[in-house]
Image (cartoon, rainbow, N blue to C red; front, side, top):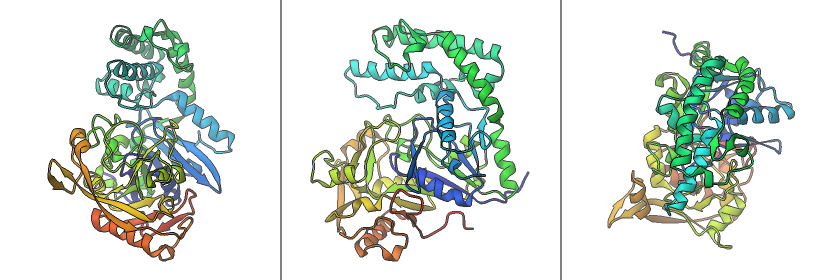
Length: 457
């Protein structure tokens, strides 16, 4: 067995996603030779700002902006080839070399047009029945993972055999079209212009799906790889690897606010399964968390504020923080920092350190709320419960701390932060039990305070 020589770091969202992981992965890539995406699909959105230029990525690891770094899409990712090539072409127009540095696992399940049709139809069916929608992005992520778990998915490796691909596709379409028409009432639904070319009378047609997949097959073949083998070989040769998670811990299908979750495991442990490496190769787990809380879509949110009312702290977070989803454009719900939630996240990830992002958004608030626990059915608890129904009944218990009027934007030295900002950060450390390794004070990669370098041995 090869001995591990490189130093590896896993970056995970410690809240409900949108914590600013993209910027930190980009920054940490300075110390890495490979960056790995290990779960999720193009429902993720990572925004990078480099020298004032903004780049949004959805599938390709954020390390792609560094010349010479190899980027890997692991088997835990569900892959939309359509979206992948849209992203590649956009980066290439900006002068970024992608195809020579991107490796895609042959074991990735494919997201095909009928997955998105199913996603949209299911949300519409919930709405018709008067049931609260899950709040999916409508991109087919969940249905693709269902096919994977049911052992019927079409995978990247199937693209190498057109006949085998066609046979599997016909069987899948027969199953899913039956559900669409007879259970979800797809013939009575309106679908987007992007999905309409694949549909006829509510059924997804074989020819356009197959023809598009075969076009993508030729483009994908040079990038197909045994990612597990390549990662183990790279680490044994001394490469530092950075594992990039998508979404956030509280959206994890097992450990999140189920059923208001995504369809994959977002926790650090899935970096091993989703990339094909041993758990012993995961040396440092960095949890990314905003200095406050946000959430997109439905589901319980104990510290949520009335963020739509001008003049309130929640509105301040929403507007100053520009809280709109990168992938969907949906407004993010905003609230105070929840340390009890973070303790749950630290527990299931085994966090080595925290990176606090968007500290500068809190500049100018007179008072800051810090949730240190909850009251649930008359009992005081200090850890986020497991069930969504219990979480919905939680009443947050707050400590309030004085804010600061000075700007923290762009500060790169911890001692130059306002005293009240340092007090706030220190209290987060005390309540969560996790040391702060980094603080982000702006969207650009240079606007970062480093207290502990995750790649340092």
